[in-house]
Image 1 (cartoon, rainbow, N blue to C red):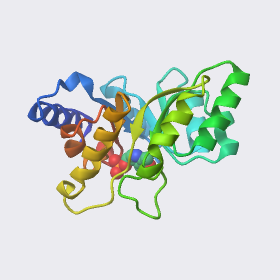
Image 2: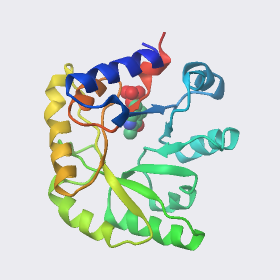
Image 3: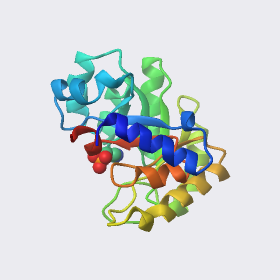
Length: 213
Ligand SMILES: *Cc1c(COP(=O)(O)O)cnc(C)c1O
């Protein structure tokens, strides 16, 4: 696949579900790839938000292209909140205490981060994310933090041979977002983005599929 193939698959999946393809954005996950590869496989096709999951690696790339739209998608320790300012959207906030630390730091720096709450929909023990049972309370608490803006939810589906096996994960996340009036749904990766789009994804985080001929 290449980036244009991924885009046409996103578009087809949106149409199958009766959705406007314009409501789905591709976040090109560039982790593990150097600047030349990113130019060759991503940037030459247009202005896509770029997703990174490690602070150190992201900082080097942001220094090279500060005007790009960068998204942070990885797990984060609290001492890393001070590096979040360059990111237009943080997908991976998985606790109220992390959100609180981020809001406090951002208030001091004078900006207002936009975040998603990560939910471990399938309750996999090794995965990050809020337990679905904790979500109501977390949304209420995070909405009380005036110094950040909660836009939606994010999840990573379990690894599956057939993406149909994880359709329920995306469907449940969409229900949770609707219940809370949250508009952004970050779900779907190389293995399962078409199913995620059919279930309402507004942001798909695709890496590997972009970097193979
Ligand atoms: C790496 C990563 C992706 C992209 O995964 P691919 O399988 O390479 O498409 C998406 N989301 C997160 C959080 C990631 O760490």
